[in-house]
Length: 192
Image 1: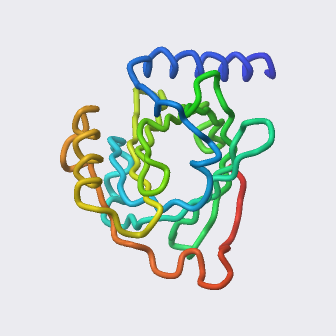
Image 2: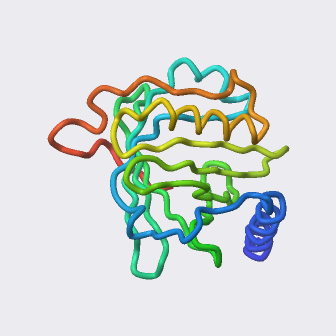
């Protein structure tokens, strides 16, 4: 069983790398400059299972923490029916700066994360890719502040459209209130 699990992970990584070969990462990606607090202010997602939740989506907050081995912890706070919840994602570096993989316990598969464009101080465009009964992709727009210039939002929308997303699948959700809770910076936490 363990051999099958390892083979699945390896095949997932190879599939994601081959299918996303045309995705270019941020040139001269600098993880230390990328570290810190980010707001997820835009999302393009084409999963049919996501459609019922589109109208409930709120902007979320995350913190990127580089680890000494080059890997990254990403702590994301999201509003859920249970309130403000945080999840910790453990991203493993690849041989390409700005590209990471992580194992999703929810989907039992490896996913590919690529920082495709950032100026570090204002915005970042991040692409997430997985193959699960079919190919799925997400494009996320992150900002260092809760509001971005209209040109940055247009850049995000143009990039998502260039990746084949329909206008209907591109969202810029409203901000979540008090998540993470004011003063504490923490909600409930679970590892992913």
